[in-house]
Image 1 (cartoon, rainbow, N blue to C red):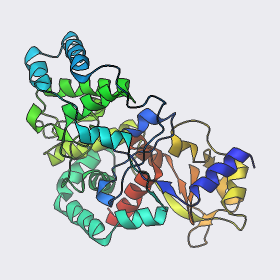
Image 2 (image 1 turned 60 degrees about the horizontal axis):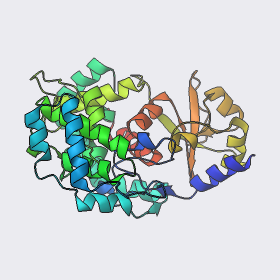
Image 3 (image 1 turned 45 degrees about the vertical axis):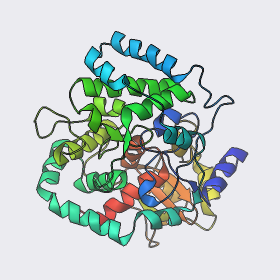
Length: 367
C-alpha cells in the first residue's frame, strides 16, 4: 500500500472534522474542506486551511463597499435595491470571528451520529413525513427522488424548518467578501443575493441565514438558489423560506441535477474481511480527484469485485447480486459501500458526516 493510501485510511479511521455550513464545501474542493450544517448537532464547524494573509483586507470596508456598489449597478442590479442593500452597511464582527477563528472539534463517526441522529430527531422526521405525506409523494413522483431523503435533508439542514439562521445575508456575504480569505467566491454570492432581492423573491429585511450566507430551509447559497430553487406551488415565487412545496421540490431538483436515480438506495453498511480496510482499499485504490470526502473514497468497482475481496453484508451474508458500482467509505469501526445516490448527497454537501447523517436518517424515517 502506498504511503498516501495508508495515511488517508488511518486519518479517517479514528476521527472526523466537523463540517462547515452547507454548500461552502464545494468551493474548497482543492483545499480539502468539508461541509454541512453543524449547529443542530451542538458542534463548532472546522476551519479550512488559510493563506498567509488570510483575513487581512486590502481596503477599509467603506471604500471597498463603494466599489462593490458600483459593480452591482454595472451588473444590472437596480438602483433602489443597491441603495437599500448598501445603506449603513458595515462588516458583521461575529462573521469575521467565525471565519477566522473557528475551533476544530474532532469526533468519531459514531459520536457525531449519536449527537445528530437522536431518538427525538428521528421521531420528528417520521412525524414530518406523515404530516406532509401527500405533498411529498407528489414531489417524489415529479422529480423521481424518494421522499424520505427530502425529509432527511430538510431535517439536517434546518431542523425541519425550525432554524434557518439569523444573520443578515447581504451583510454576512459582504463581510466575507471584504475579509479576503475567499473573497472572490463570496463576492459572487453577494451579487447573487442582490439579484434574488432585485427579482423580488424575498424582501431585503427578511433575507437572513447562516453566518456563511446559506439561506432558507434548504440552506442554499445564493448561487444554488438561482440555479436549483423551484416554484412548485406556482405562486410566482421560489420560496425556500416558507413554502413546503418549494422547499421539497428545490431539494429534489438539486439532487436530480447531481445524478440522483429514483428507486435506488444510497448504499449499505458492510463487514470487512480479516485483513481490514487497509488490505481491501489497497486492492481497489482511492480516488485522486474531488473534494476531501471524495478523495477519502475508493474508486468505483462492481459489487462482484467487492465480494471477491471479501466484503460482506453487515449480517455476514453475501452482498446483493446486482450489477452496480460501489465505492468504499471507511471510518473507525464502520464501513459502507456507497452508490451513485450517495455521491449525489455529497454533491449537496461534500462531507461524509453530512451524507451519512442524511442517508441513515432517511433509512430510519422509511418510505
